[in-house]
Structure formats: structure tokens, C-alpha cells
Image 1 (cartoon, rainbow, N blue to C red):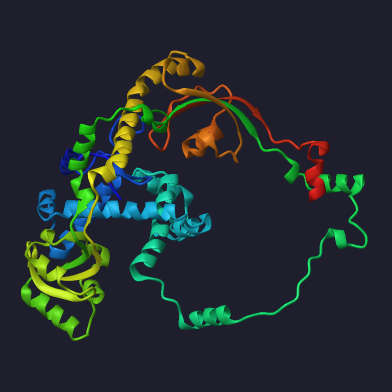
Image 2: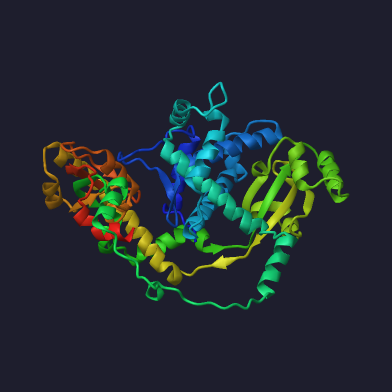
Amino acid sequence: MARSKTSSFFVWIILGLLFVGLMGFGAAGLSGNVRTLGTVGDKDIPIRDYQNALRDQMASFGASIGTPISFVQAQSIGLDQQVLAQVIATRALDNEAGALGLSVGDARVRAQVMQIPAFQGSDGVFNREGYASALRSVGLNEAEFETGLREEMARTLLQGAVVSGLQTPDAFASTLAQFAGESRSFTWAVVDAAMLADPLSEPSEADLTAFYEANPEPFTSLETRAITYVSLTPEMIQDDVVVAEEELRQAYQDNITDFVQAERRLVERLIYADVESAQAAADRAAAGEIDFEGLVTERGLDLGQVDMGDVTESELSDAGPTIFASELGAVIGPLETLLGPALFRVNAVLAAREVSFEEARDDLREERAGVRARRNIENSIEQVNDLLAGGATLADVAERTDMQLGTLDWTVETTEGIAAYAAFRDAAEVAQVGTFPELLELEDGGIFALQVDAITPPALRPLEAVRAFAVDQ
């Protein structure tokens, strides 16, 4: 269930700000500026994604009708809400892909990055400086871009499986059927060390020493950093946050469309300048001369530019009843719309659903408590920064705030506890002994600061300490 973590009122504030220039929502670090519209599961919905998607859809829609449209016009036809629904749906797919463990490897991401023309030099070869510069120009760093690219590739795999299904080639299906139906008869026996005529001898000291000296890498310890840190995350304090029943009910009502949804359709719409052109296109489709994709392509558009997302019958105005009564995949129309005659295609039916307040209570409570916890953490940032700037130690900070003190022997393989956060690992890797502790942000809205007390460089461990491991090798 995807629900925005901001109220409807808050969303309209954001839309109003977007109207005043569609700019100004860059990353805010710890400044307190809003950077997300909400979350879907574990995935944030960045305002930047919504802003860029809305700008692209306005430009595409303007191109399809031959004239640019303003933000007010986009609102009047519900384009802003359609884009919001699309962005939420995209993050829902990202969340589901993550929950399923669906991802792509670094090699595929790297190959994709190197194929993007914008990141190539005049010689057509990938240029790292050009790559970094291009990302900076749009307010991104390499990690953010590559994470987004990885999610997009995983999302594409998931969409392909969900929307179109996986078509198994006949030869493959036949081979599987034959394999499943076949039987085997065989004789087997266990052969273990106890059955050997001559047991395996222990390696001699000379053999062990020679192997140890010839293969130092597996016996070399990783660089270890002794770290002291303070941290505060929403999870640490949200159980103590009190959320009144009235607030929960108000949140339910404010987001009622997330809990009570009418039957919807996934719809594509192709607008024409006049009825004659639209009817001629519909006749060609009916005669089997061209399909909907072909009609879109010959207009110089792609399917993404004509996608309306999921819509209710009422959102389609007078065209709604006809579209909702049509078969999946059929070319529908021409039908009149506020923007002129259009052809439609329905790609999926989404059933109506209703989640009662009682069913949603726990999620609402967790959501509201999480919002308050993050707000409380944000409000504490200035105090913590003042303490650090005044020379307070991390122990002093923990004593005078809600932050918790901890220590950690960190290596690049440490990924538990506070080291589960990428932001912490990144900071731990570059910090040096004596570096001033800086307050930084965690991915879930938490904060932390760390100092490196000592660095133990990689070292070959004594043979006696790794003897058992060496014997096993």
C-alpha cells in the first residue's frame, strides 16, 4: 500500500511552489528543507523526481498538441495528479523489486553508464570527468545516479514480468516437460576419508610455512579503524512518540483516497487535432493496418508520453463509461476530451479496494510516529552542531542530548548495526585520526557523528594465529 507521508494540504503547498517556477527543491542536507513527498515502503519519493517528471510530461503533452501548456493548464486537466500517481507507482515497483531481492549487478550498471552518449567524449569513449560534470549540472552525484539507474533496470525487469508475462519458447517448455517426466536409475555410494586405505597426512611444518608465505593475502588482516560515534535514528525514539487517536483518524481522512479507491484502468491516450484525423487513425487500426503503438510512433511520440497512468471513470469525464466498458488492448475512439478528440487504449484493470481505519491504524501510527521522530531529530541538529562547534566530546554530546554513544572496530566488511547505513560506512572510510567530528545524516532521517581513534593497517597475521585455517586450505 503506497501512502504519502504528507497531508493533502502539504502536497498542495508543494504543488504551489512548483507552480512558482518548478525550481528550488534541491538536496537540502541538514538545512531543514523538504526533499521528499513521502515514502512507498522503504523507498523515498524525492520532490526532484516529481518535479522532473512533471516538467517532462508538460513538455511532451505540449508537443503532442502543438503548443506549450502552463502549469495551470496542466492542473486543469489533472496532469499534475497523473504524474504524481506515476511517480508513486514507480517507487512502488522499486520497493517491490527490493522486497523480492531483484537487482542488477555492478557490471551491468557500469556497462549501461558507459553506453550513455552524454558521458562520452568527442572520441566516443566514456569520459569520467564528463560523467561527473554532467551529473553535477543536474544536482546529482555518481552514487545517486547509479542507484537510480540500478533501480530502473530492476524495475524494468519486474514490469516486464508483471505486465506482459514471461513467454516461454515452445522448445524450452518441451525440454522442461521431458526432463520433468523422465526418470533415472542409478547406483551410488559414499566415499569419505574413513574409507581411504592411507589416511590423509597432516601437512608438514615446511609445507605449511611454504604455503603461508606463498599466499599471504588470505592470512592478512583488513585495515581496522577504531571508531567512537554518536547516533540518533527515528527507530530509537518513535516508540516513545505519543500519537493521539484524533490525529490518526485525521490522517486517515486526509489520505482517504489511498485507503478507499474506486475501480481504475491503466490508460493510454493519443490526442488528435481534429475528429477527421482521429477517425482515420481509428479506421486504420480497426482494419488491422496499424496498431496503437504504430499510431503513437508515427506521431513522433513514445508510449511513455501518452500514458495516463491509473485513472478512475470520473477522471475520464464523458469518455469514462465507454473506456471502462471496452476490452483490454482495443483501440477506443475517437472520443471527445478537454484537449480535443483522442484515441485510447486500456492496458489493465485495477479492482476497487477499501482499507478500513482499524486495518490501517497500525500503519498510520507508525507513519505519524516516524514523521514526528524525524522532526524531533531535525529540531535537535542545531543543538548538536553548537555542542560540537563548542568543543564538546562525543561523550558530552551523548550525555546532553538523546544521541547514543557507541564504539566500533570497523573494516570494509563491517555492515551490521550503525554500519548498515551507507552514509556511515562512507564517512568511516574517509575519516582520519584527529578529524573534527561532523554531524551527518543517515538514509532514514537519523543523524550521526564519528571520530577515528586509531587506524590499524593491514598486516600479515602470524602463522600460529591462522594455523588451523592454513591447514584447512
